[in-house]
Amino acid sequence: MKRSTALAAGALALGLLGLAGWKLSSRTAGAAAPASASATPLPAQAALQLQDSDLVTLRRAELVDAVALTGSLKAAVSALVKARSAGELLELGPREGDTVRAGQIVGRIDPADAQLRLRQAEQQIESAQAQLDITGRTLDNNRALVEQGFISPTALETSVSNHRAAQAALQSARASTDLARRALDDTVLKAPISGQVAQRLAQPGERVALEARLLEIIDLDRLELEATVPAAELARTRIGAGAVLQVEGVDTPVRTRVLRISPAAQAGTRSVPVHLAIEPAPGLRAGLFARGRIEQGRRSTLVLPLSAVRVDQPQPHVIELDTGAGLLRQRAVRTGARGEVDGTASIEILDGLTEGARVLAGRLGPVRDGTPAVLR
Image (cartoon, rainbow, N blue to C red; front, side, top):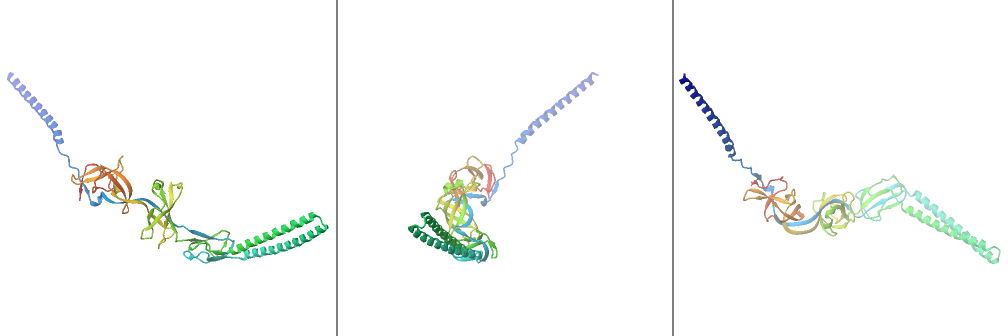
């Protein structure tokens, strides 16, 4: 009995010892697992694949200090042919595009009414002249009668007043005749300037009112560009400065110069109107759209395309490709004047890069400093 009890107790002790050993080994394995996981190396960051077109080079070039502008061509000299006399339009010869000379007859208005008014005015002259002759003879007779004492001086004064009134009436009739003759002349329409017809605003057979617009004539030998310049650029714009324009429909650039600068800004845009003189050239027409730049100066300096300089941080910076390390590095730069290089908006780099440095073009999005990169 005692022997069996002892055997049972020994077996229980061995079981307890095995259970304790199993728990201990499980804890040790659990603690070792995280350590093993933390020791596993992270995968390397994939290198950014770049092409030559993704990079621009800091180079020395001729920077053109320029102010961009847009506008439309307009004739510096234009005139309207208007109806100076109301009536039926009998003739209107020139059409759009026709060339006319100053003083050339371009149309006629029915002169019937004007001729009647002139005839009436001339008859009034005859009547006034006859009245003046009567008052003149009466005045001479009354002077003789006053000297003889047959009439009073008061009667003589009345004769003098009547004679003066007759003289004034004659002068008025003559003035009316001049006006009527001018109205008759106005029925003949003449071109006020030499140029080309831009608009024909009436047709023969229409009855036109006084001051009705009939023709618009423009002088294509004197064209101007009417453009606007932002107020911020006004200080860099001066009269006489040269400009280069690209006019729609014209293949070759058009060179011009600043002729006038408006003293007042436009209320809506706060831009200032600027007028540029344009030399006559084939293909240039009033109304054509043009864009260009006013050149303020040129100088050789280190430049980058304006889009390559990033301004999403307090200080301007670029993303430079470090070819030796195969990394993209953020470089703070100090910039200078803006302008154009070969028609591309560019900016001067004063400090922060060396000539020949290659930086990311502006079309690529944000890139972190230290990003691996490979140039294919």
